[in-house]
Length: 273
Ligand code: IMP
Ligand code: MG
Image 1 (cartoon, helix red, strand yellow):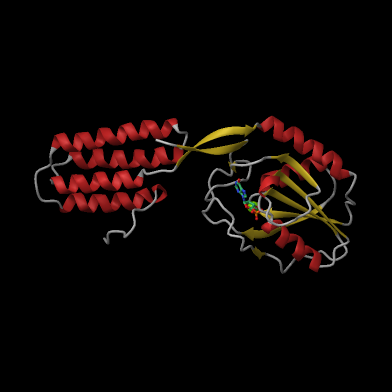
Image 2: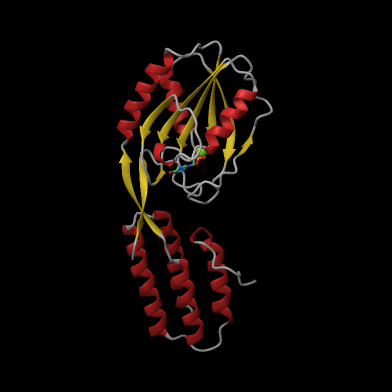
């Protein structure tokens, strides 16, 4: 097996593990029990630390690594000092931050209350027989579904796919819209439902597209309005909450596609060692 050029992120810990396994098996000298013991206790310390940080998936990946190392060292496998050092350096790179702690920003009950309020307002603006609710994949789905249920009207809905972030925490500004072919928005009231408006580039691209389809009216409803970070002007008709700064996850919001399923909204705070 080829050694990866870059240390894989923790998400790929399993591929790292199989690499380690092969490495171990190929080693020549007698195992140094004391050193490998130190190494394992280092990992254990790290796991405790990481669990405290509430980054549970990282904790889990590290646990896999630890279990595997324990398994390997049960057998009479030989390892030399250089290998121990290289393992330690891999581990230190692997576990290098930035790490984030989640802090609850908006409780589940608070979201629910606000969604009901928004539904009350929107119900007066929507004609159920001439409206398309357009959700933005994938961040808006939890908000959209809860909002639709609270609206309790015979509404039609559809989805558009918008991408700009990838695994980053800042907008790439280059917004790609997909799933546009089948949308029929002409002369409709289009309610755009989005998770969060940050720089505004995504919402701008979306409203421009919708406008080009000749709707009767566009209404925008976003769960979170990061008003202060706006780079381009967009019209937000309704918002759930205004938040000044920070990267948020949960209730549809993701970081690198994780944390969407958390029930509340959390802010990721960087942890300095
Ligand atoms: P904008 O184009 O900068 O306004 O960003 C909008 C998109 O970026 C949203 O649809 C989200 O998917 C994503 N985004 C912006 N801020 C956050 C955040 O704090 N957490 C998760 N996703 C975010
Ligand atoms: Mg989004």
